Image (cartoon, rainbow, N blue to C red):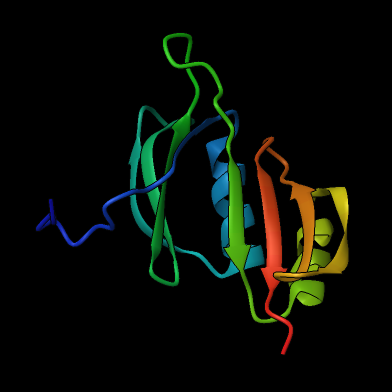
Amino acid sequence: MKNKSGYPSVMPYLIVKHAQKFLDFTEMVFGATLQHKEMRDEKYIKHAEVKIDDCVIMFADSIDQYPPQPGSLFIYVNDADEIFQKALDHGATIIMDLANQSYGRSGGIKDPVGNTWWITAEII
């Protein structure tokens, strides 16, 4: 089924502690743009959406009813070394060092709110 909303057919929806920190991280590291943000109150995000290239990630702050559900994301970038370092500079931790793989130059980090990102660039 093709949707008419303009959204991709499948999008990750992450429930995290400190959703604003997640938003800041995606903007600073991956150049994400905020598409929508709805607050639960002055402190907590009820629902937000960022866009990275043609992809949308939806996310919200966890609450008792919806505990944290961090995810694992694979992202192609132009320069894996640059983005990997930028992620570390903004609070990420290494889970797999960058290395050349059969599918590209790739490494894994955990962002400041617990999501895993597999940062990969094609090797030309």
